[in-house]
Structure formats: C-alpha cells, structure tokens
Image (cartoon, rainbow, N blue to C red; front, side):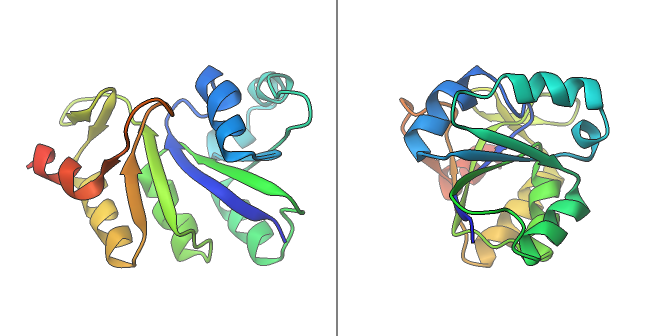
Length: 162
C-alpha cells in the first residue's frame, strides 16, 4: 500500500515549489492530485503531467474517485504527496476514509471575506470550521509555504484569524 508522506493543501496545485522543493523534502515518488476540475480538463492535466520531475509519477482523480481508489488500495506503492486545492476537499477525503496524521496548508488564495493569516494563505469562516474539525480528530495542522519557512501551528493561525 502507498504511504502518504505529505498531505498539502495548495490552491495552485502543482507548481514550481511543489515540484522542486516539497517532492524532494518528502522524498515522494508519486503525486496524487485531488481535483474534480483538473481531472475533467484533459488539456491542463497533460500539462501538469509533463511537469513531473524524472522518476515522479503524477495521478489526478476527482474527489470521489480518490476516496474509492484509496479505500481499494489502488494508489499503488511508494511514497505519495497528496495534493488538494482546498480545505473542503480535505474534509471530504478525510471523511471518506483517507486519514493522514497531519496536513500542511501551503496556499489558499484571496477572495472577498477571506483574511490573510500567513504570507499568501487566507482563510474564511468555513475554512476555520474545517480546520477545527480536523484538529479535533487529532490531526496535526501546520501552515508552511516553502520548506525554508518555519511552520506555524494551527493555534497560532487561529489567534491571527480571530
């Protein structure tokens, strides 16, 4: 069975930092992108696939397909970086059976009614509710955009939010 070595929430999904820094640091040999939107866009999906470093496989599934594949042990073997675009998706896969010891929030873009809490990471009330729910389940949650940044714990982020 595959081992999820990093579960990252980043609205940009695959980008330079994920490919050059987080893959190396986590020693992942596979990236599983969870996105209904990307899974249905064959052109953009092909671009993402071509961006993979040598030796790193990329799979992309919609939310429900991700849950199904995980529960049927269809992620294969090796070390997986699980990449999701938002906290709502994280809650759905968690409730569907994909339990991870922790998540790293690395990028949630701005929009109306969102508050900047750490660098380019913004939250709204719905995000905070999900973070508190996951934390209540025992999940370790940190905020970290790049490996060189010191990770910030959820409690410190919530103080900034409130």
